[in-house]
Image (tube, rainbow over all chains, first blue to last red; front, side, top):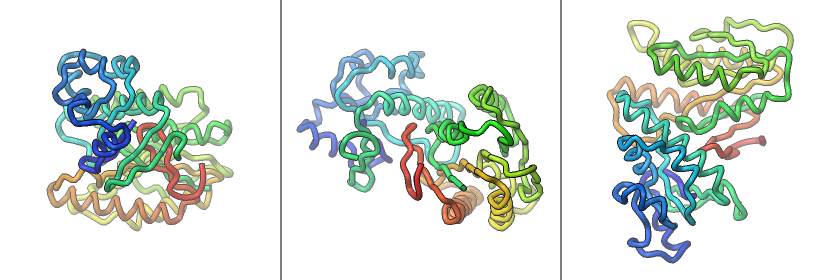
Length: 124
Length: 171
């Protein structure tokens, strides 16, 4: 699992670590949800959570069932609680889905300013 | 012993905080600072209550003026959460007021009396959005208060999607 704030170098890290090109990584913001379940590499899972919520798919059940090699999810839960209810619900659901991913993951890497820090796993 | 736990929304802060007090059964208090407002707040309170049930906490609702709290003996205290307390103190009158002193006074007060004090806060400064001036002021004050409390804490933990990252001391 790779996480961190927006534009910190998470995707670059994933590409380098697993020798991937852009088209080998499924984008949670655009890939259809059933396709995502079969993907080995996923980015922007936070956007997939948002789309599942609008398609009335349970993001937590889906996340429990996911079996991929590496997944990237933005950290979006820091900051002021959004005024908009659906934004609040998305933020909370992403937090819970991220906790499931982190529990299942062998390694969790947090990327900040391009620097990866292992917060779970062997290279800690 | 003061342990300070920060992190974003739904990152597992409360679960971790409660776990730290699992070993204690007596004289164990949960200080709730959130003024309930609206159905989401009640749902959140209900969820937290269920998680806490059977863990031996006595719940005290205290929305402002922490320094007034007197608890018997050497209690084990979980305070949740600093971000709500800060908003309550800051926006309690007609004019915005700087809550730093009253919050630090309250925190020192609890720290000096408690055997174990765990404080949960919130990281509100990392979404990169530029808000209205009052909100920016709140973010600034929260940043300062978090840094001050971290300074007097034995342990500082940041929770990231359920994973505790130790920033100071130990877990």
